[in-house]
Length: 124
Image (cartoon, rainbow, N blue to C red):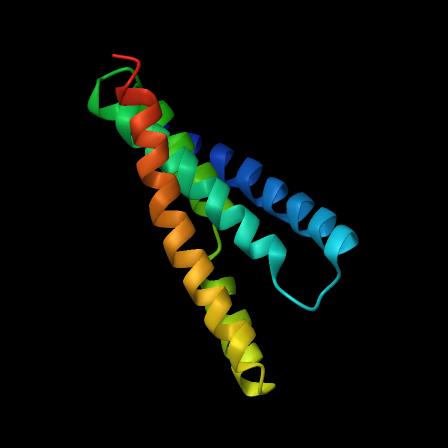
């Protein structure tokens, strides 16, 4: 039951951060490309790498892993939004933007997980 409360707390923080980041990116870059989704996916991936690496080294309690890894990062990252935005770009005939969106989200997020892990593991 305790882990559920930590997941809920982390999820509420992650959802608010996602909303704020999306608003900021819309104000900065407009709505012609889903930069907000890209940003939260890339940052979330980096921090997932950090959380995973710290968890592997037993530096995080199970409660903190649940709060950050499942709750905060689960609410922050937006694969369902990414998928919907990509489909909308395709339906609008913006095939190049859809392709770029897929390539950037997948490649940058995998790289950021790696980078997050390496940052932690290199400090050991």
